[in-house]
Structures are given as C-alpha cells and as structure tokens.
View 1: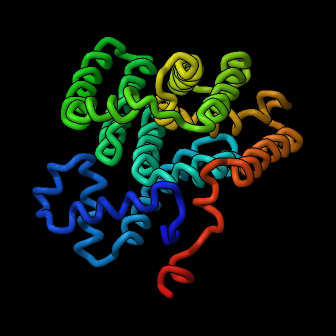
View 2: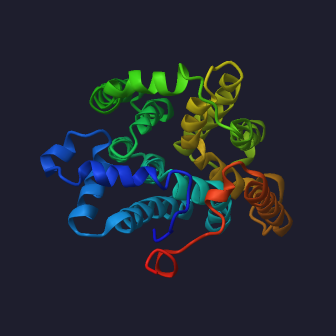
Length: 311
C-alpha cells in the first residue's frame, strides 16, 4: 500500500485522483468503475493521496487472497504460489483489477460453501472496481450442482443487469483500444501457459483431488476456461484482451499447487519433496520475471513511501 513509483500503471492512478478532485459524491457514482472512484474520492477528501488509495486497495486485495488461501489444504504453500505474479504483478501493478480479483476470491470462498448469492454479490462489488469482473458471473451457474435451471435463470438476469450498468457503455472503447488497435501483451503466452499447466494437471489427475461436490465443478470449469483461453490466444487479433481475462483464472494455480503434493505424493502425507518442487518452480518464475520481463524495471528497485516519497 505504501509502495512508491512501483508498478507499470503507477502514473495512471494519479489521473483517477485528478478526475474526482472537484466531483460531488453523486458525481463520482456516475463515473466508470464507481467503486474505485469512490475510494479515490475518499482519499482526496481525507488528504490521503495516492498512498491512502493504494493502502485501502491493498487491504481489500490481501483480505480476499488470505481468505481464499485459508480454505486450501496448504494455505502457506498457496500464499507462496501467489507471490510471483498474483501479488507482485497484479496486486502492485494493476490495482483496480487486483481489488476486483480480491473481492472475487471472497466470492469463490462463498461459492465453495454453496452460497451462489454470496458469490454474485462479491463479484458484482468487484466489478465496480474493474468492470471486466462481470465475466466471472456465469461461472456461478456453470458450477451450480443444485437447482441448476433456477440458478441459471437468476444469475443470467443479474449478469445482464451488471453488464448493462457497468460494462455496456465501455464495450466500444474496449474494442477500439484493444482489438482494433491490435494491442499485444508481451509474455501473454507464458502467463496463459502457467494457467494451462495446473488446468491440465487437474483434468488429468482429477480423481486425486479431494474436492467436495461443490468445489469439483467449479475448478473443473476454471481448468476448461484456462485451456480455452490459451487456444483463443493463437487466433485473436489482440493478446491483451485474452491476457486480462485470464487474470481471473489465476486462483486455479493456488488451488492445484496447494493440492499437488497429495496428488502426486502420498495422500495425507507431508510430501516435503513435492512441496519443495512447487516452491522451486515459483522461485524460478520470480527469478525469470525479475531478470528478463520487459516491464520488470517498474518494480526494481522496490521503493517504500516513508523512505522515498516523503523525503
């Protein structure tokens, strides 16, 4: 929350603060991504600036991440898996989408506890920070194991309403900005492959995962969608669109790799060797990203507000 000039979109968030500086609260509600705009407005009104905005965003993101990890077999391993990309790149680089995913992860916890309504509420709340979170809503209907047709009906209505309220007005801009401009994301293939790997493990070794009847369909759909997105990447005119949508599939990595020691090792055992392999894999991911990623210089060196921005 107190990072200083860290992340590729650092400068963009000052524009949000400028956009709400002279707005009334009612005016802020009418802006795009109203949840994030309300936080921006509050930060301006209270004199907190960019650091207050980032701190609140970080708390929301981290709360969702921790709640999600606590429901997995090896919470600390899942948290370690989240660090190289989910935390460092998404949480620190794409603040709005980070908050959206953090709130969506709380929704995923609710969905695993059979609360479709809870999932929908948290995802819609997340969509007020980054409108693309609306795309997660149909998963509630796909993963539902009870009253499927009724769930499909009401979730479909909510999805349509959320789309019309939050996303519809921006579709033309998104198409012109990403698709027609042929915008490409460097490293998109690697990032989607990182989702495809656990997706393949889950589908191939399905019977080794001790999912409940609610969790099973949910993560199977996450795996299928991750593989479909990888295929779409090769035919789409804009890899950036696919790359941004795939960010919402990142929780699959935490799920699969927290289960992986039991999937390939002795069920219920410590399986330290597999745990170490998972940690080494993500340590390698972090090393490669920090040393070879095109935009890694926006994170290096990591700078902290009290030591830099206040001087």
